[in-house]
Length: 92
Image (cartoon, rainbow, N blue to C red; front, side, top):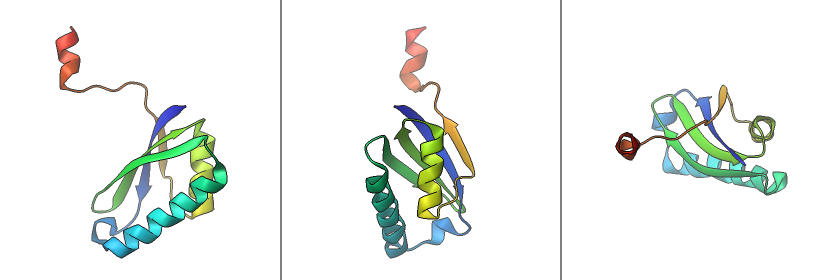
């Protein structure tokens, strides 16, 4: 499976309550169960007006289908090509 970063524009996302985030998460999990094992949600980051979600999926189309079925925006779906961190510099 490939890793994707999904950018979701959600006005006021950073002001959503724990209850509201729980409802959104529950809807996402429900749709994931419908779609099967070819898509997995790893984690999401909430900022002032956006959510950045990390998924493993067979393809980008499946990520978009998840968003459509769940009623979530998927303003950008980007496949991760590489991962770097501070240890990357040590491998030079």
